[in-house]
Length: 128
Image (cartoon, rainbow, N blue to C red; front, side):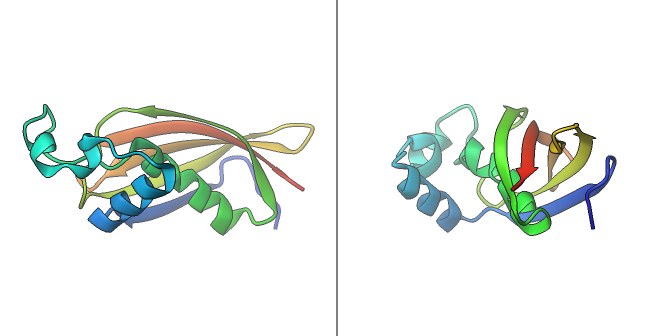
């Protein structure tokens, strides 16, 4: 079945402490915002943060689940609120456009468990 403009897809994830440690290890980022409880407690946020790009990587989850055989061409994200360890977020994606080259433009919005917008973004993909 070919994707259609207006089609929507979603994925929900609760970010655990181990998600944050593993992601930080993979990207070699040991920022205290994410891994140091005392530092985070004394910061403006009062809790440890999930890496922003870890939240943004949920676009890849949706592409992998629903668009097999497609590759990423680009992605833009805007972080609108912090995501904390233990938060459950849901990324909702809509197909905005399919151009003459069959490049699909996706718009995504990510909400936390309180319904707050934590991330918005755009991605472009193409089937090989």
